[in-house]
Image (tube, rainbow, N blue to C red):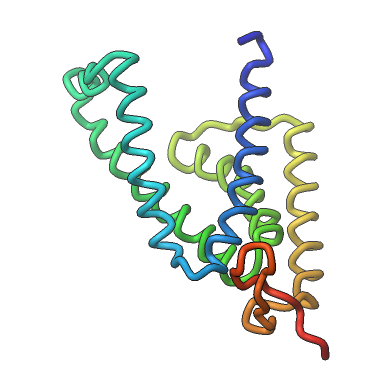
Length: 174
């Protein structure tokens, strides 16, 4: 990729996450639990990433442990963080909806900057990044305040989806 490859990849990931969250809401509304969804995701991830890892360099990835034996702790730490974050976002999608959950989740760059500083004592900010962080925080406040007037799934009536025969949420009349 070009010098902007990182940006294209990040934007592509954002689009895929957006589609994933929308479809996840549908799957959760059909009755899957967040844990069940994650187990299925994990099985597919093992097959996909295992194949990619093998094609790229076999098990050579694990040679890192020869030069950096402490890396196992960082690897376990990031795995626990990823698994926990995935569960929390799917729980949030199921408890409210994909749009609101994702709009709150986009605050993670603020936490990324904080943890990069806390764990590694790095400051990865300049004035434009700080301005963007302020806008993200302002947006989170707006979404949270506005979300209080939106119904939760428990306040919705489930009616069958004619095309699929599966229930879809509809807002009940007051």
